[in-house]
Picture 1: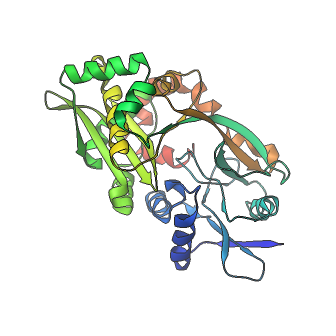
Picture 2 (picture 1 turned 45 degrees about the vertical axis):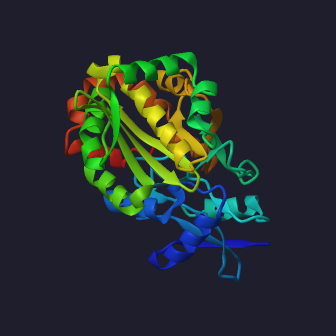
Length: 344
C-alpha cells in the first residue's frame, strides 16, 4: 500500500475533527481547536497533514504541525506541547507514512514529531528519523476515588504539604485565564523565560471552552498560585502552573495539584498527565510525589542530521543567564516575539 499526504485546510476541519475524536491515542494537541489557537496567536504557516491511501479520499492519518522560521531554516513541528506524533488508523504501514510525511521541509528544513512511550507509534528508525530524548511525562490513573489516589499514590511529603496548605487556609476556586495570567507572567519573569501573550490564553479558552479549566489557590483572599488544565476525552493535561515565590511556605502548588487530581476523579477523567519535565530536576521530583507512571518523551527528526533542533538541553544551559536578563526577555513586546521562535 502506498500513501500520499496533503495540507490540511479549513475545508478539512470536519474530517480532521472526526478522525481525532475517534482515535484512542489522540491528545488535546491534535485537536483542530489547539491548532487554530496556535495559528491565530503566532501567525505560523500551517503545516498539518492529512494522510490517505493513494487514490482515495478517506483519511488514514493526521499529523499536526506548523512551519516555524529559524536561523538555520524552517522547522515543521507542533509547538508548545508534549505531543505531536501522527495519529494513524489500524493496519497502516507506519514506516511508509513516516517516509511520506518526512519530505518537504525544504533544503535547510527539518520535521520534528514529538512522541511518547505510550502512543504505540513505531518505525521511526526504519523511516530514517533521528531521535532526541526530551524528558519524561508522568501520567497518573484517576479512574478511582480521590481518597484511594491520595493514600496509595501520593507520597508522605505530598500528603503532608496538602494537609498543611488546607490547615493554613489555602483555598482553591475556578478562575478565568485572565485571572491566571498575572501569576503566570510573574513566574515567567522570575524564571527569565519568554512568556506567551495573554491573547493566546484567551484564544485557547475560546476554542476549547469547557475543556480548558483554571484553578487559583488563594490565601486570605489573595491569589498565590494557579494551574491551567486542558481536557480531551478521558485525559487531563496540566499544561501550565504558576505560583508566587513569597507564598511557597503555604504550599500552593501541592494544593493545586491535589485539587486538579480530585476534580479529575470526580468528573470522569481517567488519566492526569503532569506534562514534560527532565529527570533530576526539582520540577520532576515535585511531580513524582503524586505518583503515576513515568513515560519517556522523544522527538524524532528528519533529516536525522538535524536532530539537534529538537534538543531542549540548550534551554537548561542558558537558564542562569536568562534569569539575569529577565527584564529584557519578558518585556511585554520582546517576550512574546521571542516565544514565537521557541518551539519547545
